[in-house]
Amino acid sequence: MNEPTVRIQKVKKDTVKIRLIIFGALAVALMLCSIFAEHLCPYDPYLQDLSNAKAAPSAAHIFGTDAYGRDMLSRVIIGSRSSIYSTLLLVAVITVIGTAVGVVCGWNGKRIDTVLMRISDVFLAFPGLVFALAVAGVLGGGIQNAIIALVAISWPKYARIARSQTLAQKETPYIKAAKLSGSSTGKILVKHILPNIIGPILVTSMLDIGTMMMELAGLSFLGLGAKPPMAEWGSMMSDARSLLKTVPWVTFAPGLAIFVSVMIFNLLGDTIRDYADPRSRGR
Image 1 (cartoon, rainbow, N blue to C red):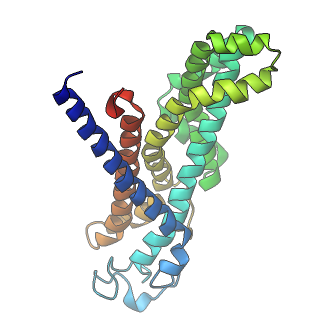
Image 2: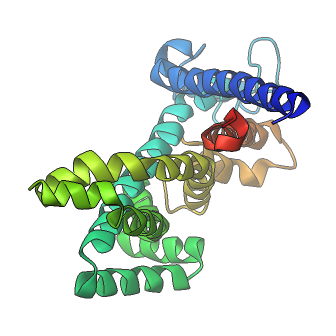
Image 3: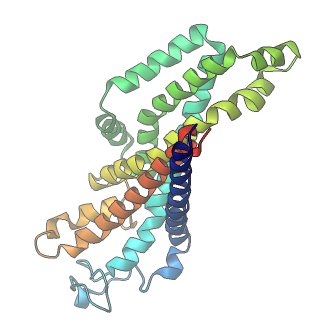
């Protein structure tokens, strides 16, 4: 490998590391903001003051106030708790369920593989958000039911990835050696299979955070997610959509929060994918 190529690879490696630090720090800042949301709110996010309703953005109320006189900045901050934590919980659940299903299918094969993969085909045959709307509608709405609906449509992707990775690892020499040494199936799966397939799955889950946040906010916007008076970005946009022409800041504030959060998590996911690529780190 010639010197210019080595120099280019080093520059790419350093760039990816810098991006990882920056976007990782921003993502951590978002999560810390949601953890300490109650202490960061300048006003009570649920306190109504009709005498100050629909106030324009000012030094006292940076994002203005809504139709009930509630400070929009405080509601956006407190809404980060339900929006971000619900999304992280959703991604964690679908990652665990999908990975477990995929590993079982890839390891055991035969009938259980056929049955579970055909079930996943059924879920993948429908448009994701439409299917989620149907499930959430049947369950009756609410943030918990919205999470369940999105879990129901999202696990097959992870199952497919875990299954393909497990099938690839299953026939490797070190797995055969582990079997010959008398290791139990559970020990092989936990100590050998999972550590070697978890990389692509974690990258996929990081890339999915932004998508799941948008879909969860979409369900709330349509009335099938968080219910008032809970402050959640999607439901806040839904409640204020009739005021878009007269007091647009009431809608723009939670919309901006969704945009910034999704952008940060998407950029972090892209950076982690680049960092996991051996070509970006050199050989």
